[in-house]
Length: 171
Image 1 (spheres, rainbow, N blue to C red):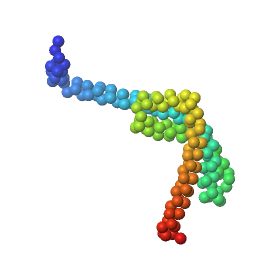
Image 2: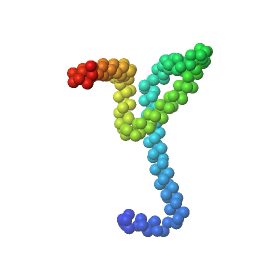
Image 3: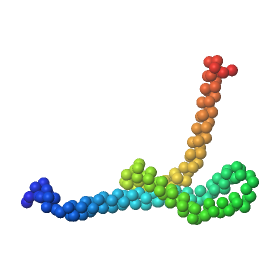
Image 4: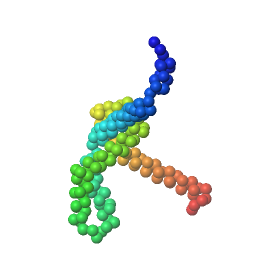
């Protein structure tokens, strides 16, 4: 048996230009299929995460507050306009568009920061009862953390002002 290093160069030399191009196309296609398969796996997993989060109803609930914050800048616009906007922006079609946007962002984020195996581990955790509980309480935890941060900021602010006064920089 001849070794690969002995017969492969001869095969390459004897291959016509058309055959070389064909082989290059096959190799490139195989690479593209592999990358595409990984991307679609990341996208499928991103979709699962978006579904597990179940945030679409939260977005619908937030819509009146978002519109109200815009409405104050346009006091002459009739309430009927805002009602129409509420209905339109809370529609299933709008929520589907938002969901697809989230899937796109999550797909990119996951593919840039996690291996497929790590994404599977994340999905396994968030699919579990404790993972679901974590997601359901995540907003509350973020709110409480924000409150702690605000209180800490006020304490730091008072300490700085006190020290500025003690050193004579302010009266």
